[in-house]
Length: 370
Image (cartoon, rainbow, N blue to C red):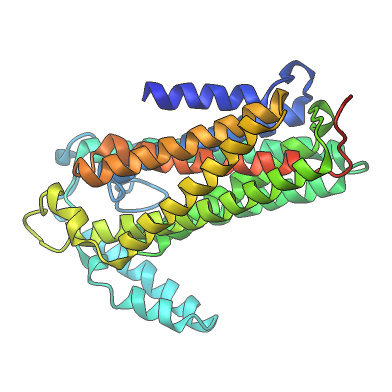
């Protein structure tokens, strides 16, 4: 965790080299970016501890705004009650999906046996999930505040206001999607969509923060080198997004393995060997990412690149290889929980840092100072 904290601090130093000169919108947007990354960290803890169904309903938790601390506070038939609520909600969702033409997804939700699985009360898991929701609510407020402060750009950079408004809409949709994740009892595919949407929101906010402060970023390189860095980082970003999607699919396969036996969870030492082809694909892409990251490191070492761009580039390379090492640890150390969390947060940091470097190298007509 100390390693992760150091990387976050370094990333923050890269993103905020001239923080004293930022206006209220820029500070709010950047704060929201880091708060969203923190929410991904909390979400990773929820996933690694199996607390996703710690609250079997949404937006309340066990029917209350403040969840219980003991099973004695719940009625004796609480499990049947919340299963019935989920089934009723899913019937409405299925009807909506069928009306929109998503018959395959509707059929999957309607016939998933896990939806009717009763959840035992566990105070620790309940409060972990509850705190996850509280952090999510704070993020929602920050995103809306970012939009309000973006109105100051309505006359000069109207796109910033539109994109900030889009972040508000997507955050609302993300909250609704979270309710679907709960009502479908962590249905495979929904969690992946939840993660992808979180990254869309955070990159939207990062784009707005950068575009309103890019005049503070000084980059002095010639166009040929700029294009080389831009293309290389773009390839790395595409590979990283694919790895994120593949990684969520691997995680969902692990959930299937864990739930394959109703009474006994298979030992962690058997999880990796039980994974199918998706894990092989995920591992193959990690080699491509390592090669691309190595090439980026070679460019940074060979060429005369300094200042903020050098810091972002080095951070990118460090994150790539740290992420690969964490992945190796997951495969050979029986999927420890702490590495699961670090792996999830690591890919989010990677994508943000790569996106930032693309923004920095995408600016045209940069000339190398003499």
